[in-house]
Length: 296
Image (cartoon, rainbow, N blue to C red; front, side, top):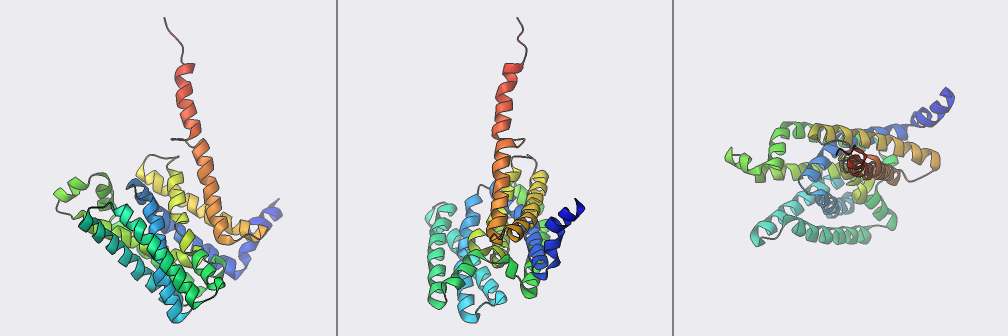
């Protein structure tokens, strides 16, 4: 039994590429889910997807300028994501349109521009690598960059945590205390861009948001407290990262999709059997009055 467990759970990580992939996945799993929880609480779940596409033109320009140079591609992605966030916010303020509609418009433009740039400068293999990532190909340079960005996100999130919570729940109170909500919102979107930039190397620009949002939305079925949401989301992301790598190793599956699909399985099971708002919870709530004794 122990030999079987060792062969399935530990032996795959004897290889260097699996160890680097695991560390990269765990680093992203610590930084991404808390951002996803705040996006969910702010009603901005789809903004994460839009921002994931917003970094694509910058990544493509970095790729065209220096090939598969992770520092250049990451720098381009950060600048592109921040530019799209500023443009969407500016258009929203100047025209009165909702920020999510402006973001959706720029996300479509960014996606098309990024795919066009990569296609003009490389092969379909290059495009696939940028769009879908390759966590098993993470080298030492990429690992250091991912770990550094994830650590920076966690530290900055800890610094602005209380202000961010108040800004989510009662922005008017925050404004009354002399704190500009727009600044907090901008810093938060900057952290989202940083996280997606760190994740594109491992999961690609199209799936990097999956590790951010799926654990966060899954946690909603198990806790109603902010601390609980964040802790459960991180735990789900950690299990999905390690479990997805093991599945990809033993079943010869693509590693990135395996991680996201495992998180997706957790979401579906939670929607069915979770403690709060799930189908089972609703059934128990409706069945309770029927089971109560009737008194004359």
